[in-house]
Image (cartoon, rainbow, N blue to C red; front, side, top):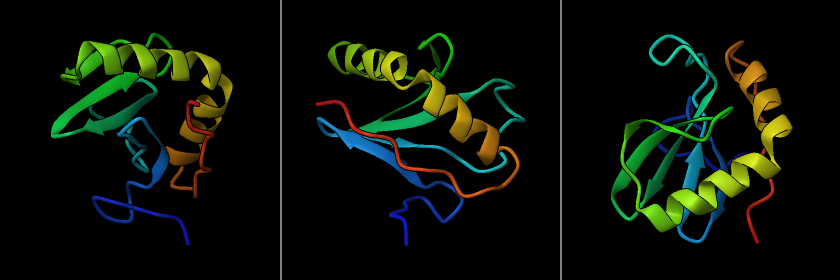
Length: 98
């Protein structure tokens, strides 16, 4: 069983440096582009996968830099998970930033 938070439709795909990264199933309506949801000590943001820009919410600058590096490193895996997620499939965990 995969770790989940915020319900079974939003599995955790990675965790590093106190940052929790989620991806919703069937979540292509509001932001209309591939994205992840992130939390860090009460801050929440939605971040575009292709660009690493914040679509909604906020995140501390130092944590955003870590997230952007992680997105760049795992770009292909994130887009593959996104393709699975928008079809309602079970997504895969992605290696955390070390």
